[in-house]
Length: 336
Image (cartoon, rainbow, N blue to C red; front, side, top):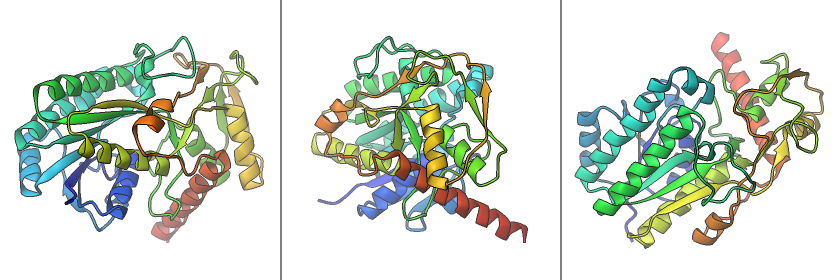
């Protein structure tokens, strides 16, 4: 079977660049479109085609889809910082929802058959129970989660009206880096705990803030389900293969490991992996942070051939740390 050419939006970013590697390693032709506002041109594997531009540029999109004969889209482009979405909601509805509408419209016009969407556990808001299943009510508490949920709804409606099927993957906490050191999380000002912790371990930060120590959890700090970015990229590949195999079927699936670690447990693991002690600053809770977010991943394990391969907190941290050290070497080389 001839493998379709896949357009990866936001393929110069953190998760997108890992998905590009997974696709290329599996033999798929890949074209990346990215405006490089938060992504990096060097993060795109040279085996992939590259188009610099935004997904709300309709003429550019139509031309790209047609010229490259795109058969499937993996959509990662968008804004992802929750507090910023509260401060600047219109940016999120523009970059995430409105731009996705343009992309979906162009996909339908070009006859694209398969669409995989980078969604988020933020669509659930503050769930009443964990683990969270795909049937847990979706009640986003910020514009980021709402903007992603609106795109999911657009995809449902479009798939019902046109010959396009989709998979929305709802990520929990993504961390780590490509085990071969080809790409990793490189954006400045990252807010994810493991990224922040390895930045502190390599001297880029003086400390790690712990927001809230009075949650009803085993040590008072928030508990999250951390998934290795390479496992997440593999889930996208398996989702694409499932869409191709059953062109009339759609999926909405949680992406997590089904178990959680507290903030303090993560920091203890970073201390263990680095053999050093990272300074911790105890801070008040942040508004809108649930005590515990853990995925029920039984649906994805049932629906796809995907099986996690790096489901180990120390492994996730070691890969993130190795990448952070590569970034530090890159900065030093550029400064020299």
